[in-house]
Length: 436
View 1 (cartoon, rainbow, N blue to C red):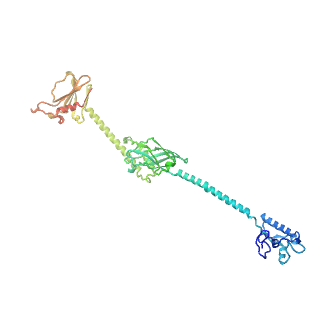
View 2: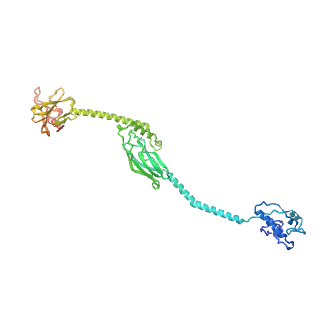
View 3: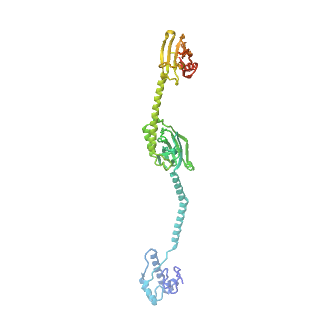
């Protein structure tokens, strides 16, 4: 059996519809005409109950209206016959349970589902990919790229224990961050990592070579650009095209301040060990100071030697208005003396004698000689003689000297000054003369 109001299935002995609460008589039968208006009143009461529930009021036991309680004089109410079971129903109307229409709910669910599906589609189709792209771009911008630069210097080798060179990098990353930082680079050009952006690289200070060499800091600037294309390269960015060359500071010119500055830069290289560069800043600074001190001492010794050589040269020099003679280094000038001769009366306005101090003990080793400029040749005996040439004033310059003739014991003198034949000796002396 089914309820005529809501269509719910009911058991055969049910007195009310289990769903809407309509009495069984009204739920299964059409009202007869003899009850007049009672069925309509019953329907109206049920509809009121249903509307109350629809408005959200709590459902429960509802007292019967006087009209419904009185029913009719025949003892029937709402078309029901009065019996023992009906007597219980006269005092109260059974709770009315109504079911709202599911259509609005279903529509609402469908709308929500469509919104969810649409939102999901938009999120996964547009928002999520865009966010992923932005995240990937931010990750790429934050990633550091290897940059190789070329810094060369004579004697500088970090693999041999030299310190790394400090480079100051200034610029701006693509993500907008300003950069002003010092990086350390080894002699192979490794050690610089930069994010995408545009930078200027300059040498910040001098490294110290293993032997203590200090280098002049150049003002060369290298422009480095790290873009998406170069950052994607396996080997990183190659900036070795713009090479920076460091010139060694002459050891004698190195100052304590330069050594201290280079040491400070070396001490600031905290990542050297991780980069495979092993050195001790204190040891390198000590080597630099020693190299400088040794060079200064050597220079001083060299200067003193040069001074002595100049003094010796002056001692070997005969300078006149007509000629200049500088005796060769092999001539033992410290054993000889130079004496100016007054031969003007015999036509020689400039004449000098070079003779061994204390005199010659062996006439066969006589290296004494005269050099003179003359208009009329003086007359004297000599073992060797050669005319050097003529001055711009027309005077002749001549060299003559040595021993000749018989010795004191009657032997013939065979003079060989400095173990040379006399004429070769004379020619060697002539080669030391510059005419004026």
